[in-house]
Length: 199
Image (cartoon, rainbow, N blue to C red; front, side, top):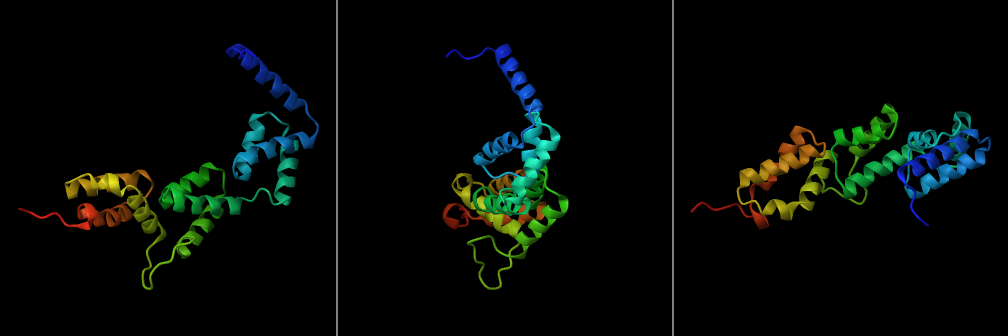
């Protein structure tokens, strides 16, 4: 089957949107939401935006979202907690970046603050701090990010330039200046943790 041309694709999309706008069956909207949720976890607002972009009637969108929420398949608190935990584990970000990402997902400001407060209350899942080590979650995340990039940073012979690159990396990932400074200070040692020797 030949691929549709640009105008053909546009006409097909417009026709699909006309059918969506004319539907009166909440089951059709539920099926569309279910397909969207199959890809990954979403916030309520992400699902709402997706269904609005597909041009489903607003009343059916809200009815479908209400049913999905009541069924427990859509939970903003669980979504936000999982998002933060995933970021801390796989792609560490600073609190500023996490707050921005969650806000873009359409989450309520109070909910974001609650989830970030929970993050600050203790170590990340599966992580245990040594007694007396009360490292802030941002510092822990920054150190994990630097550990992931350690081999690249170790190729930089000049300790000052290595710290600058580490600081810039952390700043790009939403860490505040104090955390960037504190985490990058540990990179003064060269590869293998040895302090460079002056001849």
